[in-house]
Length: 78
Length: 534
Image 1 (cartoon, one colour):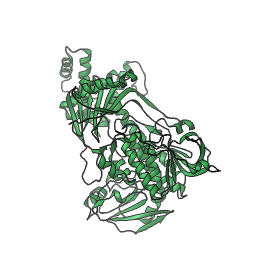
Image 2 (cartoon, rainbow over the protein chains, first blue to last red):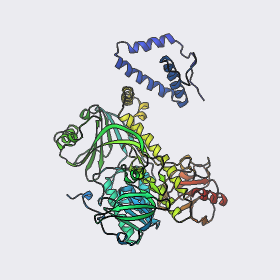
Image 3 (spheres, each protein chain N blue to C red):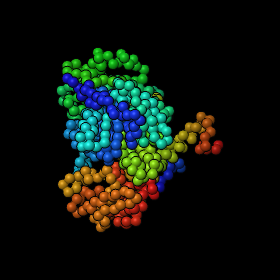
Image 4 (tube, rainbow over the protein chains, first blue to last red):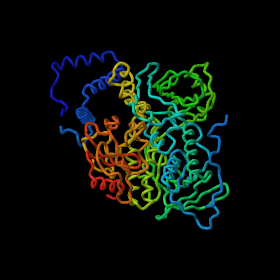
């Protein structure tokens, strides 16, 4: 049973980050949102496994919650 | 042209009950002569359970309304003696296409597996279904079956006295009282029975309006379901085109929430919308138009004492997915035999609680699916619209996104997983026919398996030795010996890889229990369990 990999997994993290930023270069907020939505759907389909996707949703939700200052039951301790 | 829905089919006639010195008690009174009430009454009368249907009207429903009938409800209607007429008159279709703006986003083919009597879907105006059901009622009456429809009999008051239900009925000739051992409320989404008894009906309102225009025209569109997201002729909204018999086309325009109903329903405004869609030179006649909003909701329980709720009276969904009338027919299919066994004293009243348990489960399945479709079709937040549009866009070039496109998940039969009536199961047999599932059709000896099933408990012995009949706790179980060597589809659908199998079926054709070999004690225990005596 696979689990969400939260350990470093990209051979060149800086390179990916630069490419992600480049993809958004010159886009308006609306265009960037549209790009992100497509990217999420494409990657989610590639992952496929419902368990991994649920863990990813949870990890993203917790991180966003923490940033917003909402402490949830699942929220990670600082 | 006089349309069928303009002709009184069950005009008011004075009943002897109105002149009886003492209030007359009936075993079952059905409120509402829509498709669900009529199906309920026919099913009971076929079982020789006396039934009276009361309706405040005397005609079939006005306008085409429900038009998509799925395979499982057609199988149920076959058991009621109307399925073949429906399929003969209806438009059979398999292909659906989804367009975004002017592009075809994707198409689906329901590609029905061969070797089934009924097609995956037909389209037929609801008034035809009601007409065939009324005709069937007349046939049963002629055969001396205990069934009666009373037109223009409006239920004005209702009370459940514990031992029976008391009704006050208004007629053109004044009121009278009636009593019923059991009352089945099939009086639609605005059920007055539900209101008079003060029961809940909670759920989610969707803030949107849809305009239905059913038009008669000679058009060369194919017999397919066409659905548009954001078409040029209805910017920012959706639209649907679907064929019905008699050259009637269902056209459905999403309008949004903030509209002027009266203005939208003016013929010149409907005409403007139709011409934008079909072109300026099209000739058509408007058969019916209506603006609807919808809710997804259900009653918490479908049984309240001696009153049972079925169809829209008990649950309501959005029209996407054809889960309204189709699920109502599955309600009455579930209820008729339980009511019969309870009235006969064969089963305890708690069997009727399983009607509620099984059909609320079915209603939840429909509500989930229809809510998801609605959220996709009418996104209500900026972010849901963003993802919806991303899916539609990706679906053109990327196969993976097509299953995410949701223009309605079409009605499929409900499997009562986890029902208290379900008996033993085995992994050795195909998963699709596990306890709770409806029996799958297959060719049998030149006919169809499903034509041989239903209306009573049955034991299918497939390639297996066993008795020729069985009686348990007052239930006669008919035994069918099926030879998989002579009927290969029965072999592949019911055995999978197993050499033999035994299926216990309920009167609604659903599987109650199954085994890989015959064991009489186990079958007897499963029969008791299936009638809530286990």
